[in-house]
Length: 179
Image (cartoon, rainbow, N blue to C red; front, side, top):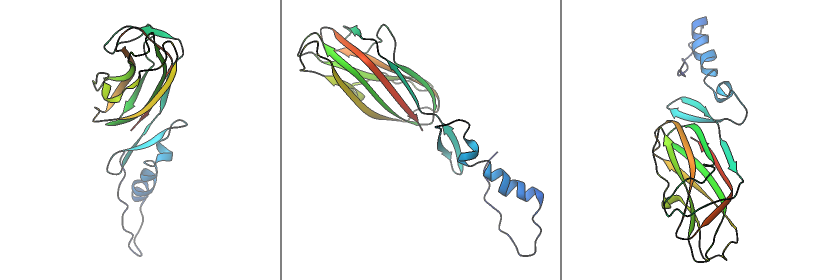
């Protein structure tokens, strides 16, 4: 069903059942309240006079795990990871407690996208820590907007790397608002 521009009423004309169904009932069924099927959904336009509902999601891994990889990689417990239906845009917020065994070594977190879209984790949207006392956790968080995604089922996965030595990550969290 699609939304239809309402007809123009003319004095003394008959308003038929078909017209009522098209311009009143069917149009009301295209509104955000009619489309919402669960709590906390967000209406998103998919084109002129068209909306769909998207569901924000969150995932978290609390376990502390380490890596010595100098390129973005998974930890023993992958993620956190979220698969959601997106349009061309998704807003993500992600955070982690991180530390390194050396004070002067870079420790970083990014997000990769797979599924309908394919984007490797990148320093363009990373959390990082450097110059903090060795083995001393610091909390870092950021918000990033992915644009140009291929609409469909997309999976967002946090990835981890270090400049050198060994990095440890805990309380890892990702939140997605798909648009």
